[in-house]
Length: 400
Image (cartoon, rainbow, N blue to C red; front, side, top):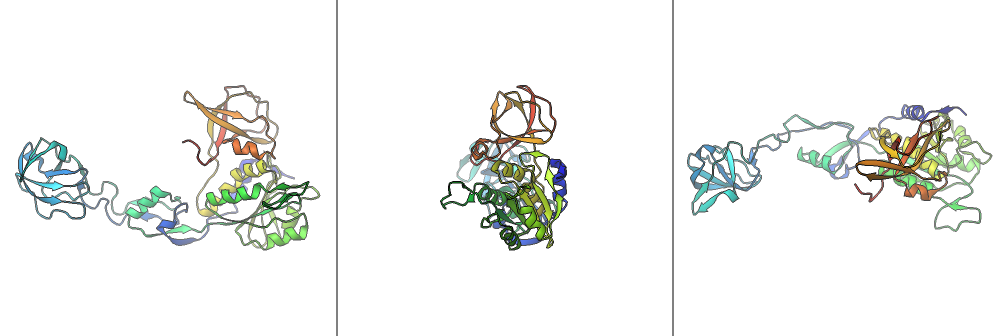
Protein backbone atom coordinates (compact mmCIF):
# COMPACT_ATOMS: atom_id res chain seq x y z
CA UNK A 1 0.00 0.00 0.00
CA UNK A 2 1.14 3.54 -0.76
CA UNK A 3 2.15 5.34 2.42
CA UNK A 4 1.44 9.07 2.84
CA UNK A 5 2.92 11.37 5.44
CA UNK A 6 0.63 12.55 8.23
CA UNK A 7 0.47 16.07 6.80
CA UNK A 8 -0.20 14.88 3.24
CA UNK A 9 -2.86 12.43 4.41
CA UNK A 10 -4.62 15.07 6.48
CA UNK A 11 -4.55 17.52 3.56
CA UNK A 12 -5.97 14.88 1.20
CA UNK A 13 -8.79 14.14 3.63
CA UNK A 14 -9.65 17.79 4.25
CA UNK A 15 -9.73 18.45 0.50
CA UNK A 16 -12.82 16.21 0.37
CA UNK A 17 -14.73 17.97 3.16
CA UNK A 18 -16.44 21.35 3.27
CA UNK A 19 -18.60 23.17 5.77
CA UNK A 20 -22.15 21.87 6.01
CA UNK A 21 -25.13 24.18 5.27
CA UNK A 22 -26.29 26.72 7.82
CA UNK A 23 -29.24 26.43 10.14
CA UNK A 24 -30.70 28.96 12.57
CA UNK A 25 -30.78 27.98 16.25
CA UNK A 26 -31.73 29.80 19.46
CA UNK A 27 -28.72 31.52 20.96
CA UNK A 28 -28.91 29.34 24.07
CA UNK A 29 -28.36 26.25 21.92
CA UNK A 30 -25.37 27.66 20.01
CA UNK A 31 -22.55 26.83 22.42
CA UNK A 32 -20.09 24.55 20.67
CA UNK A 33 -21.49 25.45 17.24
CA UNK A 34 -19.65 27.40 14.53
CA UNK A 35 -21.07 30.63 13.15
CA UNK A 36 -22.17 30.67 9.53
CA UNK A 37 -22.57 34.46 9.59
CA UNK A 38 -20.89 37.57 10.92
CA UNK A 39 -22.55 39.16 13.94
CA UNK A 40 -22.46 42.97 13.92
CA UNK A 41 -23.49 45.50 16.54
CA UNK A 42 -26.80 47.26 15.89
CA UNK A 43 -26.18 49.88 18.58
CA UNK A 44 -23.38 51.26 20.72
CA UNK A 45 -22.50 49.36 23.90
CA UNK A 46 -23.00 50.88 26.34
CA UNK A 47 -25.60 52.99 24.50
CA UNK A 48 -25.10 55.91 26.89
CA UNK A 49 -22.34 57.28 29.10
CA UNK A 50 -22.77 55.75 32.55
CA UNK A 51 -21.27 55.49 35.99
CA UNK A 52 -18.71 52.83 36.85
CA UNK A 53 -19.33 53.27 40.60
CA UNK A 54 -21.99 54.14 43.16
CA UNK A 55 -21.57 57.79 44.09
CA UNK A 56 -22.38 61.31 42.96
CA UNK A 57 -22.58 62.77 39.47
CA UNK A 58 -21.04 66.24 39.50
CA UNK A 59 -19.42 68.91 37.39
CA UNK A 60 -15.68 68.62 38.01
CA UNK A 61 -15.45 72.41 37.91
CA UNK A 62 -17.53 72.51 41.15
CA UNK A 63 -15.18 70.22 43.08
CA UNK A 64 -14.02 70.41 45.76
CA UNK A 65 -17.12 71.92 47.25
CA UNK A 66 -20.49 71.42 48.89
CA UNK A 67 -23.24 70.81 46.37
CA UNK A 68 -27.03 70.65 46.41
CA UNK A 69 -28.56 67.21 45.76
CA UNK A 70 -31.19 67.54 43.02
CA UNK A 71 -32.15 63.96 42.18
CA UNK A 72 -31.11 60.38 41.51
CA UNK A 73 -30.00 58.29 38.52
CA UNK A 74 -30.38 54.52 38.82
CA UNK A 75 -29.82 51.71 36.34
CA UNK A 76 -32.82 51.71 34.01
CA UNK A 77 -34.15 54.98 35.46
CA UNK A 78 -31.96 57.93 34.58
CA UNK A 79 -32.20 61.51 35.82
CA UNK A 80 -33.84 63.50 33.05
CA UNK A 81 -32.88 66.97 34.18
CA UNK A 82 -29.58 68.83 33.74
CA UNK A 83 -26.91 69.34 36.37
CA UNK A 84 -26.27 73.05 36.86
CA UNK A 85 -23.37 74.71 38.69
CA UNK A 86 -23.38 73.79 42.38
CA UNK A 87 -25.57 70.70 41.92
CA UNK A 88 -25.08 66.93 42.26
CA UNK A 89 -27.12 63.82 41.43
CA UNK A 90 -27.03 60.59 43.40
CA UNK A 91 -25.94 57.91 40.91
CA UNK A 92 -25.53 54.13 40.93
CA UNK A 93 -23.32 51.77 38.96
CA UNK A 94 -24.51 51.43 35.37
CA UNK A 95 -26.87 54.39 35.55
CA UNK A 96 -26.80 57.05 32.84
CA UNK A 97 -24.65 60.11 33.56
CA UNK A 98 -26.97 63.13 33.74
CA UNK A 99 -26.56 65.92 31.21
CA UNK A 100 -24.16 68.54 32.53
CA UNK A 101 -22.16 66.19 34.78
CA UNK A 102 -18.69 65.10 33.68
CA UNK A 103 -17.44 63.12 36.68
CA UNK A 104 -18.55 60.67 39.37
CA UNK A 105 -17.28 60.94 42.94
CA UNK A 106 -17.45 57.55 44.65
CA UNK A 107 -19.70 57.48 47.69
CA UNK A 108 -16.86 56.62 50.11
CA UNK A 109 -15.16 59.94 49.29
CA UNK A 110 -18.23 62.14 49.82
CA UNK A 111 -20.01 63.30 52.99
CA UNK A 112 -23.77 63.89 52.92
CA UNK A 113 -25.55 66.30 55.20
CA UNK A 114 -29.27 66.27 54.48
CA UNK A 115 -29.77 67.81 51.06
CA UNK A 116 -26.11 68.73 50.65
CA UNK A 117 -23.09 66.65 49.64
CA UNK A 118 -19.45 67.61 50.22
CA UNK A 119 -17.17 66.26 47.49
CA UNK A 120 -13.37 66.32 47.01
CA UNK A 121 -11.55 67.46 43.90
CA UNK A 122 -12.10 65.30 40.81
CA UNK A 123 -11.27 65.29 37.13
CA UNK A 124 -13.47 65.07 34.03
CA UNK A 125 -14.09 61.42 33.20
CA UNK A 126 -13.46 60.01 36.68
CA UNK A 127 -15.39 56.76 37.25
CA UNK A 128 -17.27 57.09 33.96
CA UNK A 129 -17.79 54.62 31.12
CA UNK A 130 -18.18 56.40 27.80
CA UNK A 131 -20.91 55.42 25.36
CA UNK A 132 -19.54 52.86 22.90
CA UNK A 133 -16.67 51.91 25.21
CA UNK A 134 -17.25 48.17 24.52
CA UNK A 135 -18.24 48.43 20.85
CA UNK A 136 -19.85 50.76 18.31
CA UNK A 137 -22.81 50.29 15.99
CA UNK A 138 -21.65 48.45 12.87
CA UNK A 139 -18.64 46.80 14.52
CA UNK A 140 -18.29 43.11 13.59
CA UNK A 141 -18.28 41.40 16.97
CA UNK A 142 -17.99 37.76 15.90
CA UNK A 143 -16.77 36.51 12.53
CA UNK A 144 -18.14 33.66 10.49
CA UNK A 145 -16.19 30.52 11.41
CA UNK A 146 -16.00 31.40 15.12
CA UNK A 147 -16.94 28.61 17.53
CA UNK A 148 -19.42 29.86 20.13
CA UNK A 149 -18.49 29.46 23.79
CA UNK A 150 -20.29 30.99 26.80
CA UNK A 151 -18.29 34.22 26.59
CA UNK A 152 -18.92 34.68 22.86
CA UNK A 153 -22.56 33.82 23.46
CA UNK A 154 -22.65 36.71 25.92
CA UNK A 155 -21.21 39.02 23.26
CA UNK A 156 -23.85 37.95 20.76
CA UNK A 157 -26.53 38.48 23.39
CA UNK A 158 -25.22 41.97 24.09
CA UNK A 159 -25.75 42.69 20.39
CA UNK A 160 -29.41 41.77 20.78
CA UNK A 161 -29.25 38.38 19.06
CA UNK A 162 -31.78 35.75 20.11
CA UNK A 163 -30.90 33.42 17.22
CA UNK A 164 -27.76 32.81 15.17
CA UNK A 165 -26.93 30.98 11.96
CA UNK A 166 -24.52 28.09 12.55
CA UNK A 167 -23.26 25.24 10.41
CA UNK A 168 -25.12 21.97 10.75
CA UNK A 169 -23.38 19.40 12.90
CA UNK A 170 -21.82 16.57 10.89
CA UNK A 171 -23.49 13.20 11.34
CA UNK A 172 -20.79 10.65 12.12
CA UNK A 173 -21.59 6.93 12.19
CA UNK A 174 -19.09 4.77 14.10
CA UNK A 175 -18.90 1.11 13.14
CA UNK A 176 -16.81 -1.39 15.09
CA UNK A 177 -15.94 -4.69 13.41
CA UNK A 178 -14.37 -7.94 14.54
CA UNK A 179 -15.30 -11.34 15.93
CA UNK A 180 -13.28 -10.61 19.05
CA UNK A 181 -15.27 -7.50 20.08
CA UNK A 182 -18.31 -7.51 22.35
CA UNK A 183 -20.15 -4.57 23.84
CA UNK A 184 -20.76 -4.27 27.57
CA UNK A 185 -22.72 -5.53 29.43
CA UNK A 186 -22.62 -8.68 27.28
CA UNK A 187 -20.39 -11.45 28.61
CA UNK A 188 -17.30 -11.94 26.43
CA UNK A 189 -16.26 -15.39 25.33
CA UNK A 190 -12.86 -16.84 26.23
CA UNK A 191 -11.24 -15.24 23.17
CA UNK A 192 -13.14 -11.93 23.15
CA UNK A 193 -12.62 -8.46 24.61
CA UNK A 194 -14.90 -5.53 25.39
CA UNK A 195 -15.26 -2.76 22.80
CA UNK A 196 -13.26 0.15 24.22
CA UNK A 197 -12.66 2.05 21.00
CA UNK A 198 -16.01 3.05 19.53
CA UNK A 199 -17.58 4.28 22.83
CA UNK A 200 -14.66 6.67 23.30
CA UNK A 201 -14.71 7.80 19.67
CA UNK A 202 -18.42 8.61 19.94
CA UNK A 203 -17.76 10.90 22.90
CA UNK A 204 -14.79 12.49 21.11
CA UNK A 205 -16.88 13.31 18.04
CA UNK A 206 -19.60 14.87 20.19
CA UNK A 207 -17.05 16.93 22.13
CA UNK A 208 -15.61 18.17 18.83
CA UNK A 209 -19.01 19.34 17.58
CA UNK A 210 -20.44 16.39 15.67
CA UNK A 211 -23.51 14.21 16.10
CA UNK A 212 -22.25 10.67 16.62
CA UNK A 213 -24.14 7.43 16.22
CA UNK A 214 -22.60 4.17 17.37
CA UNK A 215 -23.76 1.44 15.03
CA UNK A 216 -24.17 -2.11 16.23
CA UNK A 217 -20.92 -4.00 15.87
CA UNK A 218 -20.68 -6.52 13.05
CA UNK A 219 -18.88 -9.81 12.76
CA UNK A 220 -16.22 -10.63 10.19
CA UNK A 221 -18.66 -11.30 7.37
CA UNK A 222 -18.36 -9.22 4.23
CA UNK A 223 -22.07 -8.84 3.54
CA UNK A 224 -22.74 -7.85 7.15
CA UNK A 225 -20.12 -5.09 6.93
CA UNK A 226 -21.49 -3.92 3.56
CA UNK A 227 -25.05 -3.73 4.88
CA UNK A 228 -23.97 -1.85 8.02
CA UNK A 229 -22.17 0.73 5.89
CA UNK A 230 -25.02 0.93 3.39
CA UNK A 231 -27.56 1.73 6.09
CA UNK A 232 -25.49 4.35 7.92
CA UNK A 233 -27.27 7.75 7.78
CA UNK A 234 -24.16 9.90 8.01
CA UNK A 235 -21.93 12.45 6.37
CA UNK A 236 -18.89 10.51 7.58
CA UNK A 237 -18.61 6.82 8.41
CA UNK A 238 -15.80 5.92 10.81
CA UNK A 239 -14.90 2.24 10.99
CA UNK A 240 -12.86 0.80 13.84
CA UNK A 241 -10.92 -2.35 13.04
CA UNK A 242 -10.65 -4.38 9.87
CA UNK A 243 -8.68 -1.61 8.17
CA UNK A 244 -5.59 -3.66 7.33
CA UNK A 245 -5.16 -6.35 4.68
CA UNK A 246 -5.41 -9.58 6.68
CA UNK A 247 -7.79 -12.41 5.88
CA UNK A 248 -10.32 -11.12 8.41
CA UNK A 249 -9.95 -7.42 7.55
CA UNK A 250 -13.06 -6.80 5.45
CA UNK A 251 -13.69 -3.06 5.77
CA UNK A 252 -11.87 -2.03 2.58
CA UNK A 253 -13.55 -4.78 0.58
CA UNK A 254 -16.95 -3.78 1.93
CA UNK A 255 -16.29 -0.13 1.10
CA UNK A 256 -15.19 -1.09 -2.41
CA UNK A 257 -18.52 -2.88 -2.86
CA UNK A 258 -20.12 0.51 -2.17
CA UNK A 259 -17.98 2.27 -4.76
CA UNK A 260 -15.11 3.47 -2.58
CA UNK A 261 -12.70 5.89 -4.23
CA UNK A 262 -9.57 5.99 -2.08
CA UNK A 263 -7.90 9.30 -1.28
CA UNK A 264 -5.56 7.97 1.42
CA UNK A 265 -4.49 4.33 1.18
CA UNK A 266 -2.23 4.16 4.22
CA UNK A 267 -0.32 6.55 6.48
CA UNK A 268 3.35 6.54 7.49
CA UNK A 269 2.45 6.88 11.15
CA UNK A 270 2.99 4.83 14.26
CA UNK A 271 0.58 3.74 15.58
CA UNK A 272 -2.06 3.81 12.85
CA UNK A 273 -0.43 2.74 9.59
CA UNK A 274 -3.59 1.01 8.21
CA UNK A 275 -5.65 4.22 8.44
CA UNK A 276 -7.36 5.01 5.14
CA UNK A 277 -9.87 7.52 3.77
CA UNK A 278 -12.10 7.71 0.74
CA UNK A 279 -15.40 8.69 -0.83
CA UNK A 280 -18.25 6.23 -1.39
CA UNK A 281 -20.27 6.25 -4.61
CA UNK A 282 -23.15 8.07 -2.88
CA UNK A 283 -20.88 10.87 -1.64
CA UNK A 284 -20.50 9.81 1.97
CA UNK A 285 -16.95 9.96 3.30
CA UNK A 286 -15.30 7.02 5.01
CA UNK A 287 -12.45 7.09 7.51
CA UNK A 288 -11.03 3.67 8.35
CA UNK A 289 -9.26 3.49 11.71
CA UNK A 290 -7.26 0.57 13.10
CA UNK A 291 -8.84 -1.58 15.77
CA UNK A 292 -6.18 -1.22 18.45
CA UNK A 293 -7.40 1.55 20.79
CA UNK A 294 -4.17 3.59 20.89
CA UNK A 295 -3.94 3.50 17.10
CA UNK A 296 -7.56 4.58 16.75
CA UNK A 297 -7.24 7.37 19.31
CA UNK A 298 -3.98 8.75 17.90
CA UNK A 299 -5.45 8.85 14.40
CA UNK A 300 -8.67 10.36 15.74
CA UNK A 301 -6.62 13.27 17.09
CA UNK A 302 -4.64 13.60 13.86
CA UNK A 303 -7.44 13.10 11.31
CA UNK A 304 -10.95 12.71 12.73
CA UNK A 305 -10.86 15.88 14.82
CA UNK A 306 -9.83 18.08 11.84
CA UNK A 307 -12.47 16.42 9.67
CA UNK A 308 -15.26 17.13 12.16
CA UNK A 309 -14.05 20.72 12.46
CA UNK A 310 -14.04 21.17 8.68
CA UNK A 311 -17.64 19.95 8.45
CA UNK A 312 -18.51 22.45 11.21
CA UNK A 313 -16.92 25.33 9.28
CA UNK A 314 -13.69 25.79 11.22
CA UNK A 315 -10.23 24.22 11.63
CA UNK A 316 -8.69 22.01 14.30
CA UNK A 317 -5.31 20.81 13.09
CA UNK A 318 -2.98 19.68 15.89
CA UNK A 319 -1.33 22.54 17.80
CA UNK A 320 2.01 21.40 19.17
CA UNK A 321 3.90 22.68 22.18
CA UNK A 322 7.52 22.23 23.22
CA UNK A 323 8.77 20.22 26.17
CA UNK A 324 12.02 18.74 27.45
CA UNK A 325 12.57 15.01 27.58
CA UNK A 326 13.02 13.37 30.96
CA UNK A 327 14.74 10.29 29.50
CA UNK A 328 16.71 9.43 26.36
CA UNK A 329 14.98 8.11 23.24
CA UNK A 330 16.45 5.88 20.54
CA UNK A 331 16.50 6.94 16.91
CA UNK A 332 13.10 6.73 15.23
CA UNK A 333 12.21 4.48 12.30
CA UNK A 334 10.74 5.40 8.91
CA UNK A 335 7.27 6.28 10.23
CA UNK A 336 6.31 9.36 12.23
CA UNK A 337 5.77 8.20 15.81
CA UNK A 338 3.24 9.67 18.22
CA UNK A 339 4.14 8.38 21.67
CA UNK A 340 1.88 8.48 24.71
CA UNK A 341 3.52 10.69 27.32
CA UNK A 342 3.02 12.35 30.68
CA UNK A 343 3.65 16.07 31.12
CA UNK A 344 4.72 17.85 34.27
CA UNK A 345 5.93 21.34 35.05
CA UNK A 346 9.10 22.12 36.96
CA UNK A 347 10.59 25.58 37.57
CA UNK A 348 8.97 27.10 34.52
CA UNK A 349 9.76 24.23 32.16
CA UNK A 350 7.41 21.63 30.69
CA UNK A 351 8.81 18.12 30.96
CA UNK A 352 7.66 15.17 28.84
CA UNK A 353 8.03 11.60 30.03
CA UNK A 354 7.15 9.02 27.35
CA UNK A 355 5.71 5.77 28.64
CA UNK A 356 8.07 2.83 28.34
CA UNK A 357 5.46 0.53 26.80
CA UNK A 358 3.93 2.05 23.64
CA UNK A 359 1.97 -1.05 22.61
CA UNK A 360 -1.06 0.19 20.66
CA UNK A 361 -3.45 -2.16 22.46
CA UNK A 362 -2.88 -0.60 25.91
CA UNK A 363 -5.95 1.41 26.91
CA UNK A 364 -4.55 2.01 30.41
CA UNK A 365 -1.51 3.84 29.08
CA UNK A 366 -3.64 6.15 26.94
CA UNK A 367 -5.96 6.83 29.87
CA UNK A 368 -2.97 7.90 32.00
CA UNK A 369 -1.26 9.97 29.27
CA UNK A 370 -1.98 13.65 28.88
CA UNK A 371 0.03 14.27 25.69
CA UNK A 372 1.29 12.71 22.49
CA UNK A 373 5.01 13.14 21.86
CA UNK A 374 5.79 13.54 18.16
CA UNK A 375 8.89 12.04 16.62
CA UNK A 376 9.58 12.76 12.97
CA UNK A 377 10.31 9.90 10.61
CA UNK A 378 14.01 9.07 10.76
CA UNK A 379 14.60 11.32 13.77
CA UNK A 380 17.99 10.94 15.47
CA UNK A 381 18.41 9.63 19.01
CA UNK A 382 17.67 12.14 21.76
CA UNK A 383 19.09 12.67 25.24
CA UNK A 384 17.33 13.65 28.44
CA UNK A 385 16.82 17.43 28.38
CA UNK A 386 16.47 17.67 24.59
CA UNK A 387 13.47 19.56 23.23
CA UNK A 388 10.57 17.61 21.70
CA UNK A 389 7.18 18.46 20.21
CA UNK A 390 4.09 17.43 22.18
CA UNK A 391 0.38 17.54 21.51
CA UNK A 392 -1.43 18.10 24.84
CA UNK A 393 -4.61 16.04 25.18
CA UNK A 394 -7.83 17.41 26.62
CA UNK A 395 -8.40 15.79 29.96
CA UNK A 396 -11.58 16.33 32.03
CA UNK A 397 -10.72 17.72 35.43
CA UNK A 398 -7.08 18.36 34.50
CA UNK A 399 -5.46 21.27 36.35
CA UNK A 400 -5.31 24.45 34.31
